[in-house]
Image (cartoon, rainbow, N blue to C red; front, side):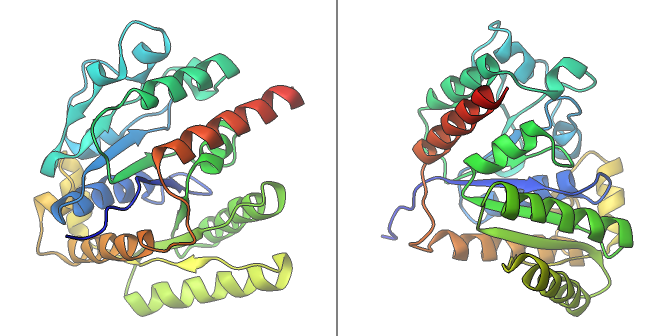
Length: 278
């Protein structure tokens, strides 16, 4: 029997919106589940949620009901393709876009009450470098940045990596080039950015895997299905499956701390720092 690895908490971020961050989060979750992993997806873009739309799961309740005390976390979780558990967030609620210390404590309490074993907790974060995004990124073991091969996306991806490294001293940062014409284009894009990071920040990021441009992704979004379920034979679906395999391989790295307790402790620590600086 394979050795049980601790729960891996993955934060998926982007320097700007519109680069496929949520699509990547959802399809990675479904791909991991298709490989036999137990996966929970937390839509942590608390003010502009859309993971439930990409996953194709209507959500009668969302995380705002947990923060308000009207629902327990287990009461709002819905099940998606391959058994992926989704924690939906609220959409279009400006007050959800920032977290105070009490709300951060509520999140910690809510997730600490989860009794079922989870192999992967994936956080689909908001775009940019807000305090809330950085709080979540500090609490994750793995931090993935999704980007496109476009000047504005490249600049913003470098910007969020710079903040993670210089301002927060975070590591285990990986890049996921999206909508590239080939895997080699994605690898070149990574190489170029990593060279800049090495030259100007004296650090490095990891290459995870690229997702090729595929018209079936847009069709699957219109159909409110993950592309890996909608069109399992297309190039993007194959890439998401390979991405999931790369993530599983990284999860066995003994130097990367794991477990939900790690997530809770880091959330507590980041909330404490935020309160002391306010």
